[in-house]
Length: 505
Ligand code: HEM
Image 1 (cartoon, rainbow, N blue to C red):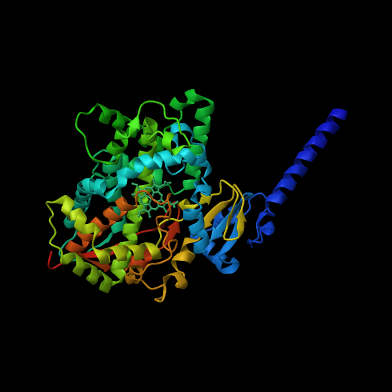
Image 2: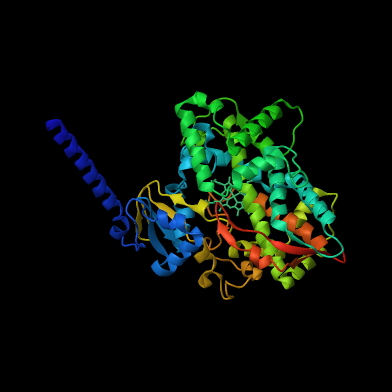
């Protein structure tokens, strides 16, 4: 009897402590004088964020109601949603040392040791990996890799050539872009010469589609999580649980890396550059810059190759999709771009010269910047987690809280982007210097997208090739296919266009 009473009392105390702590957590923003939309016990705002079709648009709607800095709860974790650009500049740039990590989904937090890649690494490990991988993405390295990219674009153009008849026919070009960007990333990061554009039964294409195009993505992530936990608890189960497409791809990278190490000839791609900067020995991180080992562990090469596939495939194909949508709906802008492109004497047999010409076309550069302002591809990966309590623009931000920029509000703010209406597509607005945190499609600061140069090279080379050859026309179903949905990236269903051969091509 006494034992039961003691147990019941302990249980009650635990419940009271839990309720007190949860209640205290939910008082976070009230204590800091920050407004919040109403939350639910235990879930915080998770349920609202899961239920919405677009995370980014929901944030934008709340900003209209609660202002440029407001709070949400991820469970009980406080998250600041911010569209105040001075505040963001402090966090992402000036006080980066207090905000160097992202808030990660549980699936990435399960990764440990050398399985941790650049996206999820924190502290000294992130600094070492970024230091070693940065030189892989210099302009010089991009120029050397441009011929691999150009080959994939050429295959796409040939494919289009065989489809386009004397009369323009409707096609969903987004599908072709996905195959082309997957070919590019397989060649440059995976180090294998796939031909996904002609070989639609390609096993890599199928596995990648399995890994990235999941209709029930949360269920899929849950499945990966369960698999990881089970294998960690009972290692021999590994042989009995079916490989997920992601681990199938990871194992193929391992095979390619092993083959590469034995091969006497060197290919210039992201994989080789990372292999050259790696060691088979142990790597111990050190917070002291002088003592930081300037190498990658062999397993980190593999995890980062896989990361590049995820980070570089859907993002770039979707940015191409948005660019094509704009070109199809704005014939005058298309004409101006073609005029700039047609003025160049393209040296198709000299890939490096072509690279220089392509990346330096001024109107094309403004055009892409404007596309990504109006249609940022993803906003969820931009979070930062506070690792030491600090003060930002008179607000005390406590350790463990999360920062999420409201990119849509920032990108459409007339004060940041005027005097021309930000709802109008106007590339010239980027010729003027803007606030450092006003344009965030690739993030900002030391932890912004490492692949920006690669992505811009691919986008520019592909658009130039298309516009030299074809006039892009809107199909009757263009708007119907343009319905957007937000998963890992914010993507349209389809981009239905018609292509007409240019008279000068
Ligand atoms: C249009 C195409 C792309 C877009 C819009 C894009 C966007 C982004 C964004 C928003 C971030 C988060 C930045 C931040 O937290 O401040 C990011 C990070 C990253 N991106 Fe990209 N990306 C693109 C293409 C690529 C490509 C082609 C690669 C690699 C080949 C790549 C590799 C990465 C990596 C490794 C990170 C993590 C960097 C770190 O934490 O240090 N991205 N990207």
